[in-house]
Amino acid sequence: MPANPYRLAELDLGSRRGDDPPKGCLVTPLLSCFPAGSSRPSRGLWCGMIASGSPSHEVPRQGNLILWFMRMHDSATAPLPIAVQDSVLEVIGATPMVRLSRLTGVLSGSIVAKLEYLNPGGSKKDRVAKRIIEDAEILGRLAPGQSVVELTSGNTGAGLAIACAVTGHPFVAVLSKGSSAERARMIAALGAEVVLVDQAPGSVPGQVSGADMRLVEAEAERITEQRGAFRSDQFANPGNVESHYRGTGQEIWAQTGGRLDAFVDFVGTGGCLAGVSRALKERRPSIKCFAVEPEGAAALAGQGATRPNHPIQGGGFGRPDLAHLQGVPLDGYLQVTGEQARTAARRLAKREGIFAGFSAGANVAAALQLLESELKGAIVAVVIPDSGLKYLSTDLWE
Image (cartoon, rainbow, N blue to C red; front, side):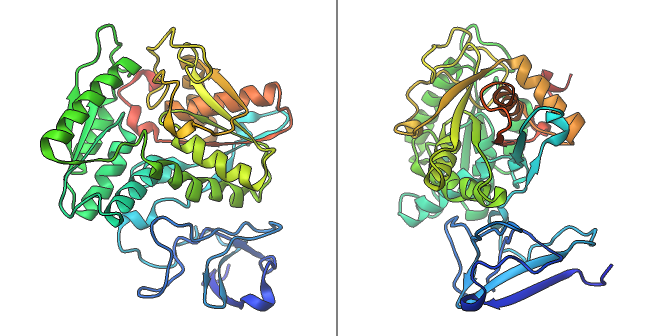
């Protein structure tokens, strides 16, 4: 094994545009390739990712150079980011993807999963929080030191707590008491003020219904007005969709080399599904994109909320009019039960070593439905939205 398996190659863009990486090397995500003080992408713009053997490459550029960070095949050491970052916000995104071959078994086709739970706050919502705060500061909607308020089932709250800690804004997270205790404790540990709202009559402890979220919304609005705060409004803020369009969706395309047939996503705000669908369909319109909802709360599919109390936290709120999904050309709607999501999440942990939450189970269960029916032999992409550590107090791991 070489003493130093890492090498940085500077290649002239004019002579090497589009070339494959040198033989014997793997190309890894570039978290940063620009020295401090130089011109570099900002506001969440995608730096670039190169997939070995892909027909085309999106690459980070500086002047007339392509910067390739390479690792020899025989190295047992994981790739390292090129530079020390200024804050934890700089390492949000560029998450890895893995093939779930141990879970799909003998099924024809495959599932490729983007491990968003490896973001600093443990979820895909870190991307959203970073984008919303950066946009608000740039546009003058968020003054220095001004408070930020948001309703959350937990993940956006953790992301905003991180973003506000770094940028110097007090943050108030408003949650339903039906959210898992771990989420509220994590947000508080990150320096935020946590306001817990009583559940609606008839709601089930440990589950957050649409009625619960309406009570949380009312309390968030009251606090925002009372404190003269900035409301990040994840259900309507376009930064939500943009963070996934410019980040998650582009990364999935690059990491798969464009070799995928479908994308499924459990819907909360709809921002991830909208952003990723837009990014993929711009590249190839034939890629099918599906919304995943809880069985009995499939409002987007037009079925209404006959069973609004379900265990899949973070979505399935029974809202048929989500702003982020207006005009998004979806190819279908899939439903999963709480038990299917729970079983799939447990199988992810035991067979793939991926310790994820309820919504990851919902995504994997929906992808398996497709491989067993209309998309046999296909490559289906999913995101693993958050970590199983956020659900230790629930029945997910009983």
